[in-house]
Every structure is written in C-alpha cells, then in structure tokens.
Length: 83
Image (cartoon, rainbow, N blue to C red):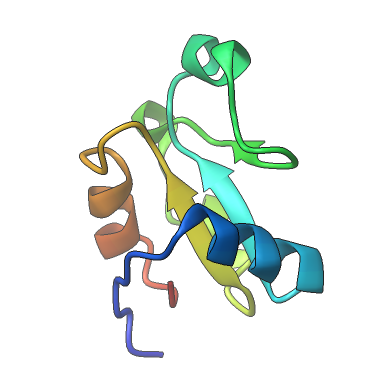
C-alpha cells in the first residue's frame, strides 16, 4: 500500500466502478449530494470521517469526490488506503 493520491477523470472513476475494481465516494454534505452526484456514488460526508469507514473498501480503488478537492484530499491522506 503506497497511499499515493492521484487525480483521475470522471470517466476513469466510472470505469473503475463499473468494472468492480473501484468505488466512488462523495464526501460532500448530504444536501450537496442530493442536489446532484455521480451515479452510484456513496455519500460519506467529510465532516463525519472515520478511517474505519473506509477499511471495507481497502481492496478497491477508492475515488473520492467533492466540489473542489479541499474535502477529499485530507480524507485521502488520513484513511490509510490506496487511491
């Protein structure tokens, strides 16, 4: 596990999810998520982050989504799984 943070395209995230090798997690607040989100994304708000929430997906490519990257980046750094 190298915990490397990489920025990928929307298309690459969807392809990883569709192939079963990845999961898309939207870290915005529930109201933002309801206003619009990537199909099949899971909503786990950054304000409620715990590293344990992400452990069940450590075998997958985890694709974190937020509006600007300012919420996803700290979660990527703290969760201790590959991205």
